[in-house]
Amino acid sequence: MNVRITPKKFNGSFKIPASKSHTIRQLLIASLADGESVINDPLDSLDTQSCLSACKKFGAEIDEQRAGERIISWKIKGNNGFYPVACKSSGELPVIDVGNSGTTLYLALAVAGLQSQVIEFNGDEQIQKRSAKPLLDALTGLGIQCGSNNGCAPIKIKGTWKGGKVILPCPTSQYLSALLIAAPLAPDGTCTEIEVPLLNEKPYIDMTLSYLTAHGIPFETNADYSFFKIKGGSSWKAFSGAVPSDFSSAAFPAAAAAVTGGEVNLVGLDPLDTQGDKYFFEILKEMGCDVKVNIIEGKQAFSVSRKGSLVGGTFDLNKTPDLLPAAAVVAAYAEGDTTLVNVAHARIKETDRIAVMAQELAKLGVCCTELPDGLIIHGKGGLLKPNGQLINGHGDHRIVMAFAVAGLGSPVPIEITTAESASVTYPGFLELLA
Image (cartoon, rainbow, N blue to C red; front, top):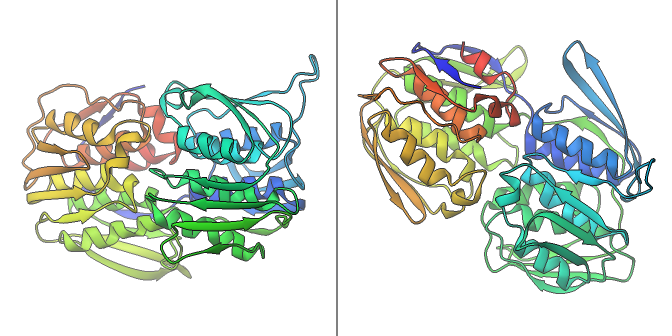
């Protein structure tokens, strides 16, 4: 599906949808728990629906509560561990289709290693190109049988978890989060020790550890998270609560205000949440935006506006690679160079986002220099010169949303392909821009 974006100033107050990262973690934890959990105000997107489907196939009973089209809550009856549901007709265990959700794939792979039946995971074309080899190597070292095509889906997993000491480099933090969620459920008497020589996206580990702490699950680690020790025999507890709003989604309406000189109030964001993508508001401040935290109708809201010019800067995105597309678009409207560094792992997301942003920004007359670990955007104060070519969204939700934002400040309308992928994390975003 293509979408045509017409230039306009972007203003308004918007409730930011729930965090995808929190939603998927809560779904998995509730499915692993013994008892009934209630997840209020979850994110209802393509990725979270993929996780929901996977949890059902692993044996969780899930009841959706709706108000019209909106999901109010999920009631989830866990079974104190994942016990896959066999296909009724054949008796065969199901294939878990994670769609486009890398988070679901990586976290569920580790959990599948807790039981002794063969489970197969698959996904869409992008998922089949995203290797989980470091995670699968670590799982193999813990006694789990793993079969794949060089780490890519389809992947077969067969436990059980025997424990031991493994080395796990983490170009994506999701590999480590996977082991942290699953290892406590290993049999009593086992011990999982993890050496982590490389860790990107550290705030997501803070997020995962916050759940272990809240559920009273013991673990040992050091200050830089280069080592973890987790004993088996623990369990996840049933819980009830709301999902925090998503800072990575909030980046796009915030960027729209920055690009167009508008003003937005983004409601529901908690500045104390563990999400690293709240760093985007610091980026906007340094680039010339006015950012405040207000109270609107009793809820916290981030207010973003701009009266002067945007200016370039240098920003380390190692902890927050998902911010690269939105930051690059804002940089296209800034005076001078903006350098986004220490973010080589942006190349192994749904697309090579460094290369894709450089390629597509060139169609708007914005020159970029690719670095091995980042991108330099040579801004000219928003003097874009679109060449009339279609912007290719590459089926990547963050690329599509970034260029939708870029189109708001363009001198002429622009058209973007694969616009439907925005629903992976932010359903309704394109309608919001209209």
